[in-house]
Length: 626
Ligand code: AMP
Image 1 (cartoon, rainbow, N blue to C red):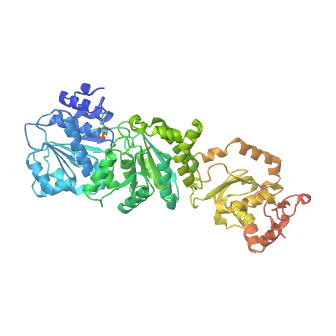
Image 2: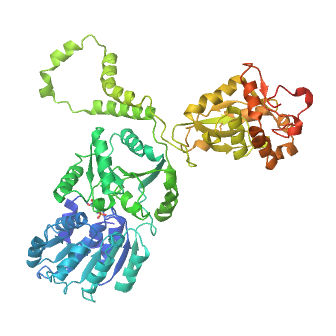
Image 3: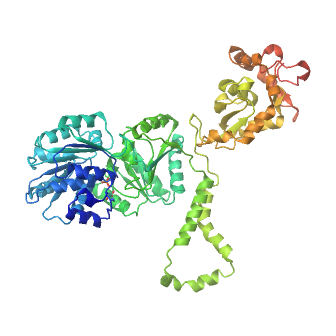
């Protein structure tokens, strides 16, 4: 389908073609034939970036009587930035129309100038609701000839508390007008506006109802609160070509994050309401021209941002209202491009991911915060590509080359390459060589400095999550709280512990602790200690299976079903709890301190009914109980 086939007027067609619009976007395909020259209300469910400005702008321009100076179209938008953007777009589309005047009125700018502008007569007024109410109160605008009202980003306007203003404005426009409402989401309040002010509107939806933009991939990283900023830096380092918006919740946090990024050498700046309009304009100008790589912004300040090719939206934390996530992520994946929306999430916030998934009708992928090695590798190859593609200013560099060649003449090509890339690589390597894993698993509760262990004991040994934790705490004399994210499988288990406790477990391997004649072995799990996605799958691999098989059925049987059950309830507890209190640990420790290398069993005498004690007498090895 072409614009011509949609029936777009030749003058508008010429302008949009010059703007590089080759074919209409899906929403334009739907609105242009339905709105132009017709008198109808419309509700359109559309994300930002779908081409919705032209979807209402082009039919709106075709309805205007340019011989009249009355205001015939009123467009309401939530922010100053969006108002300015819409006006600019309309002016561009109407390049070949004579006599059109568009005026944008919004808060944060002197009202008198806007009043003067309006007095000269504008067929189209683009306004923020608050400022327009002000102008209505001052009788500075005549809305009696309005025949189209566009509510752009209606959900945002309601989110921002413009409900009463919208009611007042719509009540001040002629009842005969048509209302075209655009919204990314359809909360009840937007539906209320639609049913109150519209008559059998045509309904248009690009994508499913409430569905987010398909071009956007949603990822989340689970980290501890204190690692939030470190995770942000990792992301920035891992995507050297990032051109992104970092969303924060408050103005203070926005400023702080931007300041820290600048201090740490990133090309970033802040955008929030405490900045003067001139400062905000400057930041936006730098961002639009891509002089700025990362814009750190509040939701409100970033609402009107219409910048194409944003590669990443980073939710430094999730928005208060899950609905706002759609607006944030909609800043990327625009005009058919793909984009990534990343949420940095702490365990406490992770529940919100589900709410957002419901709203965007799309799922998040849990991603692994890249580790130092991955970042260094990425940076290294980025540098190689950069070196390869660098523009060489032959004339300017010419005069220095002889001296440079001379200085480097004893180096081979390979040596030269090595040195050139090391210059940059070393910086990242030095920074990241001792970097920590920032990921934590879904269960949360650790401090991000953990190691995941595999141990060859599981449900078949009568263990559950708590009992194995008690057991591990007892054999290591560690506080059970230092053992977490326990995952008990049939004949093996995984658990995490803080890095400082790793040696305690590895030492047990050396001592050869036994449990029912089987040597218990602790292995540092190769999977990410803290739940990178795909972690579970990686345990399913052959080596684990082999390991499990090697314990054999027979051996498992020797623990005996009934005996195993004895761990399930109070009995098991008493064998642990009671003994621990009652000096059992002491005897274990005492014994544990001697006889390096000697195999020890953790079995207890049969009568104690502790860990699988039903073994045949002859086999009993040295034990730690009395
Ligand atoms: P919007 O959803 O109106 O903010 O538009 C998103 C971006 O897509 C803007 O930069 C528009 O200039 C661009 N755009 C809108 N319609 C088209 C089209 N038919 N072809 C190419 N780009 C478009």
